[in-house]
Amino acid sequence: MEMRSYLNNKGTRKNSMGLAVIVVAKDGTWDSETLQGAIDMVLADNAHRKTKPYISLIGIEPNKTLLTWNAKASDKDEHGKEIGTVKTATVDVGSDYFCANGVTFQNTIVAKPGVEGMKVVALRITGDRAVFYNVRFLGYQDTLYDHEGVHYYYNCFIEGAVDFIFGNGRSLFENYTLNSIAQGIGFIAASHRNLVEDNTGVLFLELENHWNWKNILGKSMGTVMFGEFQCSDEGSYTTERVQWSKLFTQEEIHPFEDKLYIDEQEWLGL
Image (cartoon, rainbow, N blue to C red; front, side, top):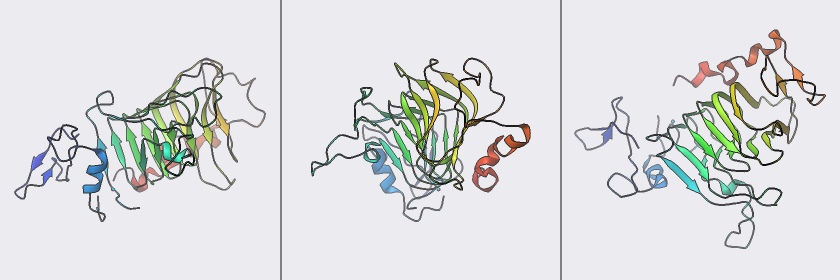
């Protein structure tokens, strides 16, 4: 997946910054035919990104590097039990300091509205301090499982119909697109925040949306607060908001104005 790579005198492929590079190609012409095979090649004590931190997944571009799977929550395992939401994930990231760039994560199941067991996760992230840049997340229900940890999503495209961003992470979405494919009423984000004192939640900055007026930006699966600041355009009128939603003042919005929300000074430049 790395286009520019070099060989040192020991035969280890490295990029221009001197970091080890493992190239995945399905035709077997490079280091591994599968992504999992490449991950397995990384040493457990990898010091550059849990179990194997500091891994970067770099694709050619999102419409050319696609990671797909087709599991749904009602599928059965070898014991005849439903696998549940977690095990539907096309990619499940548990390592800290993970980075993805120029790829698509997709669960290809075409879910049926209102049918039980149709949760289909494209990506689940439990690792801390992860970055997703120029990445697409495609699915229907529960597309992006932002389960836990601090994460930064920039220039990303997230598609789904029901709760397609959910979890209990503390995450910032900036310069991104939300694309709802719901035919009726759909929910974009569903927070699983459990306690009032939890320092978690989703922050949307510079939102570009593609949905009809029947779609609802957020709902609660636990203890949550919904707030907004200086929203405009269609859907920004507040007369139809729930009574417990909040309009932030200039002073109140300060902790949420930029990447300080995800403690960027501690890790984002690493």
